[in-house]
Length: 198
Image 1 (spheres, one colour):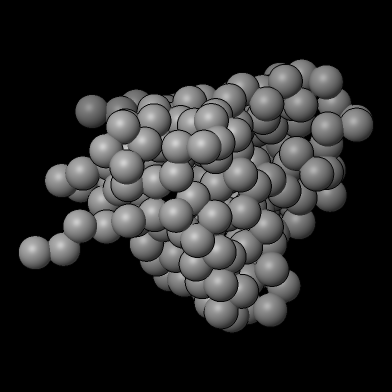
Image 2: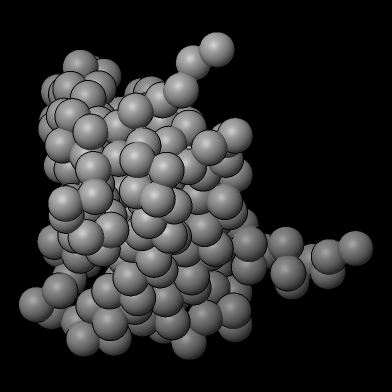
């Protein structure tokens, strides 16, 4: 059973994550977080030494949840099916969120990469881990000729992620699934994804 302090800490991270996904890391202030949680300043600083510590806690929790999402969605009877299921789960995730907020890692990379080295290194690590997971599946799919093999698995994995990030951004702007769906369709065409049926 979690202690009251642990529950409070989780609540702070949850509320702060929501704010950051809407306003960005730089524009989310301690005052915003205090207002959203209803906590006193002293209580917030009891759990986090400052905004930098809270920012990293937000990103760490988001990374952990995202890696669980990847493991949950990259499943199927074949590697090609795993990729296809992943694309569908990405669509479902952002559709269920009303295409609001986008990807916290993509947003933060654009916003903070020239401002905060520690955050930049952390985000770079998240994308590296994501790329590694996708690359492994792509390589297996190449061995079964379910995706093209004239381009390395690493390059295809990076292009898959870049395409998804672009699609998420466009869907967030238009609040419409068409932009993301079109990007996912283009990714499938780029990698020449073949799904076995029957």
